[in-house]
Image (cartoon, rainbow, N blue to C red):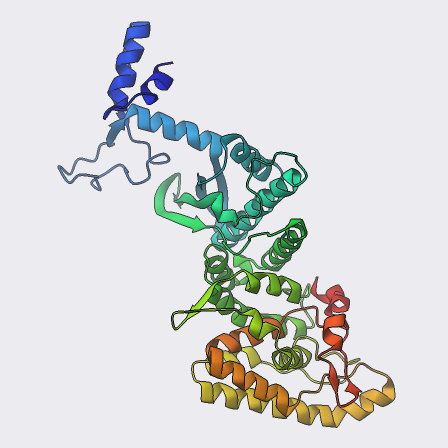
Length: 442
């Protein structure tokens, strides 16, 4: 009762007020101070690194008992901790807690309990993967709660808002192994992706599919397999609100995908992002350039852009198998990305790829037609002109990054959408649906 009474009043010193009320009620006294415990107060560690440089004593620092007690209670109730593998037989501890923003306590508790019990992140594959899984799986649970409330007559949980509207971020402490003990290594913050913002019930399902898709990508990567840089790049994207960070990841991941597809000793085929998933992401990102808000769908729905992106897919992800009849191009994503800083250089590099692609088409198309095999899409001068116009309007860097993202995605098969973009003077060249390739990629 002393706690509730104290916090219902206005005072500058809650600790003293709680002590006084407790003494009045029970006749007992509470301690005024307590030793700061680094798991609860990681910035108040033992030693000479004191909050106030008033001495160089190495005894434990002190804090008020009430703050320590409240932090401990909150951490046990709402914290997530996991041993995270950082090297062979070496594990650190990562402890995180949510920072709620606009969510009721009961709903907050329910979402977090489901995450910890049924959908916890894995700590056995490195720090970056643990962080990425944590964000993705927590977003899944938030969307699950969205869906569970979708048909409720009175929905107190504000549907159709970005997930970071309800919880702003994760705050955590990394405890590094020092043999028999663990010491504070870093204090960190992980944001939530603002682009996950369902507008209707159908989009709830669509976002679930996107999250599953992203999980399928990162769970094939691990630090022990040498994927630390890829995972760190993905974490930068999923814990922020900047689409540029996804592009940085995708450029590196695109080359990884092609090398993996070409490796006969690969244990599994790499997972790919889907066009539908990219469309959903792009639609909800606010991209500013030269003080203007750009609508990225004006780029990604352009017929010329789509045809060239599909050509990139055909020459990289979809190529290289004997039954297809054409060779795979390596390093294209890196070459396009390296020239993206200059409009002139990027147009030259893109034109060079298209010329090479068309020459290969001339060589193989008639034979593929005779054999009844799937034939590659043909690009036209009009397609290149349309992309050049996009470059002039939106910049070479943005267009290049979107071409790479879409060019190395899955889902370029026969569909109503592709029917309208796959014809060239009566010559139709369709690719297998990469969903058919999902026997390889999924």
